[in-house]
Length: 283
Image 1 (cartoon, rainbow, N blue to C red):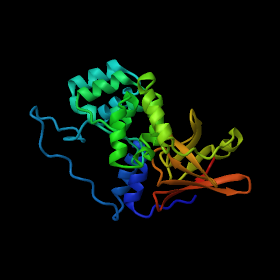
Image 2: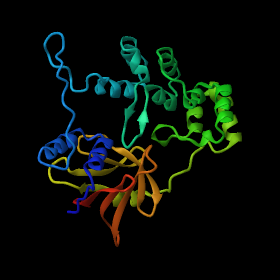
Image 3: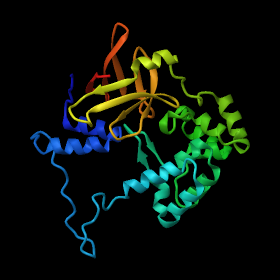
Image 4: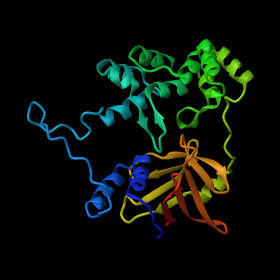
């Protein structure tokens, strides 16, 4: 087994980036005996009015609620309303799906064409973006962004979704934005290098980077192609760059490079952007 993490910060960032809650717990146990690991922040010492200790995330937003509101903003108007009418601050919350792939509820609604959800979030304090404007068909707003920052139409949204795709899911109200962006050019993104089903299967398997049940990465085939996941987390889509290299969705500076011996994939290295984790294929 090959395993190397150059510093504790890189190790922690890797596990956090993949959403590996179980991995983070394992890391904290290692830190207790690792003199090079930074000390964890002290828990708040001020008790709540009823004498109970505040939750570990206090005074920040409850991470479970943040993840929930971002998730339901893709599809469920009633659930979003129930959350943000009680806690309007959730309308502008953001969740990191991995390696800085941040998504707000408005982002989620904007790339899934959820017009009513987007409007509800904006009414409750969500911050408008060029992506929400494109989906909502706000042509003059999109033009103003481009005039202020020429070339901004090439900036991808969460998960690397192009601006043009946000406009397309907006339907008929966003048709003028689609026409404008297509004429402008540069808003469609760069297509990934294609992979056949047989080529994808070469990478599928378990890759061990540390001892124990949390020290394994799983590469699988998901709805949109290959995914990579740490123990206890959902898979992150992998975008193929060619030559056995990929990057996780929404994180173009990160590289997942697979080692190949003949026709067999034997391991992988994650560069963030320096090499931070090496894993050997075990199945």
